Length: 205
Image (cartoon, rainbow, N blue to C red):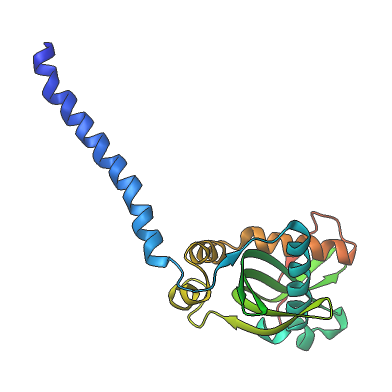
């Protein structure tokens, strides 16, 4: 094939590559614009120490708020002394007047030990907006907002998070494997189980 006869083929190949590249570049941005958050407050930066403090406040509150997750073992197998464990991924911190808004995704599970096995009860992956108020040098959760249309639907999540925060919240809500494993690692440590202790779901008559 001569150079002149190759040129149409070459230009056609270049056109295809550019079209594919354009699609790859545009589609994620169109998707991102569809799920961009609409929360108006400015996202603020927090140092590692403050971040750790806020996560501890959220964790302590959510582990006591078992009604949001639902408990099974506590009612069906109370002799196992189940506990609620949560792991939070902090997406953003915003300020509203004198309060802080914590946008996060939490994975919470009701877990217990039976022999060398971890027993799983209720559990959920929750996109949440926690309103935290400082008082006397400490922080307390004064309000919790969760998505009204489920973890995988974007309508209320967009209202809860900033433009950049909402896509991240949807991503974490859709794939909760890492969050769930982090919860179970903590439970194994608390219950004195080996790190590879299996997890089982009991059956109830």
